[in-house]
Amino acid sequence: MKKRYILIILFIGACFTSCKEYLDVKPYGKVIPNTAEEFSALLHSTLQRIDEGNEAAMLGNCNSISMYESFTDNLDASLDNGSPLAFYAGSRLNSFMNDYRDLYKIVRDCNLVIENINEKEAQSDLGKKVLGTAYAMRGICYYNLIRLFAEPYEKGKASSQPGVPLVDHFDMDEKTLRSDLQSCIDFIVSDLKKAIENNVTDNEFLFTADVSRAYLARTYFWGEEWDQAIEIADALLKKYPMIQGDEYVQMIQDQYNRKGNVLVRSYRFSGNGDVSYESNVKNLQSRPVSLDFMSLFTEREHDIRFNISFRNSLTADINNWQNRKNCCGRVRTAEMCLILAESHAQLGHEQQALTYLNDLRSKRIENYVPVTLDELPAVNENSLIQEDAQGRPLTSLIQSILVERRKEYYMEGDRWFELKRNGRPQFWSASDGLKYVTQQFMYTAPLPKDDLIIVKGLKQNPGYE
Amino acid sequence: MKKILLLLCIAAGTFMTGCSDVDELAPTNQSLDKTYILPQAKPLTQQERDIIKARRQAYYRAIGRI
Image (cartoon, rainbow over all chains, first blue to last red; front, side):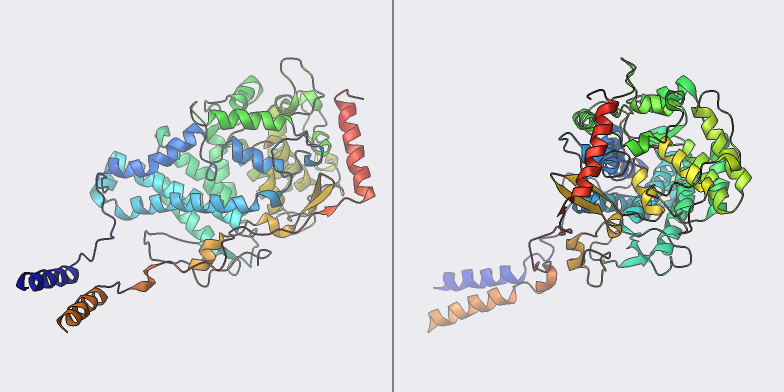
């Protein structure tokens, strides 16, 4: 009997002394980062996925780029020959919630590096690379988040436009609400500037100081800070001038190598991404290019972009209307030329804008004769974009710049965001006898439902109530 | 009586060591559905069918099928 009582008392005692931290996560077999090398491992998992062509949300791969192209007016979804490509944005809106999660996972890793790397490690060569890369990646993730999940920037209203939750430190219990769009832009600019200060030049880290500068120009451009965009884009374009001819063709069509003035690109190594790449290349063959887009190439085969985008290099057949352009996520400096052209045009500097427009066209069109302002074609009332980024009616100059951008950045995932930036026009495509309309609210993706439930007060974008 | 007291002690001990923070669990979802329902597509009108047909014919002419 005594033994029984002793056992019971021991049992009750054991219950009272049970481990409070029993369910806490412990790093058995894993390292809590301490050195710069250990912190770099947090970033290298994402960098490796980019190199293998498996990362879709941050820089993009063939899968994500072809998705963005498939529901724009560059390809004619209504004439599709049975490909699995999306036929309108609505069919992919729910999948953007995966991008939201993926981007915030990268933000989390970057926050762990930025918050925890100690001063001594941060001053070492490797430490500066790791810290600079972390700031760059975080800034770029937030840039992608606002482009996908926030409405287009409106000057004067950005402080009241909803942005995305800004998470700048790791805290599992924190439930962050959305910041306004202007605060998001300022945060991205701050991160990219810190990345530039760390001056990463090692291309193994992908997001070098020049890549950060390119994204800074893009952020200023998206945020309609035309003067700031001009300053950064001009410096980058001078450092990495545009190329032409065979060099341009090799730069665009190389499946793996970063060539010419490409600052960063995805899919540098053959590996896990090969199957997805081949599959998307094949899918794109079943989706004809839109007649509206083809007709923009008035110089036809004298425009090098026409040849690499649609012309079959084996048969020289130019009539099959199928995509031939290599598809991967990349940042290259022709975009800086277009940013300069449009920024000058938005500021009313028409001659300067025209100079940059002619400069780009001269590198792409054989025997090019520069055009004057009077020779620019009138605004096409049948085209989808009828207003510029500031909501003003299109001018011939801005229309010409947007057309050049569409031709230059075909199959690089740019068109969707250009449609978003310039008025979010409504258009339709057909599939199986039904009409699917890309409505204005669809240009802004929905926040994940899980987050709305867990975070009280987190507001959803309009159209998804 | 002793058995009852014993059982009561064991029960008391079990209750006292129970989870103090029941809010540690995530809130339950009202619905399992995590996707958004988008506007329903409508059948094409004859005019819209004619537009698609014209585009298809232009495409076939361009690639030499007609």
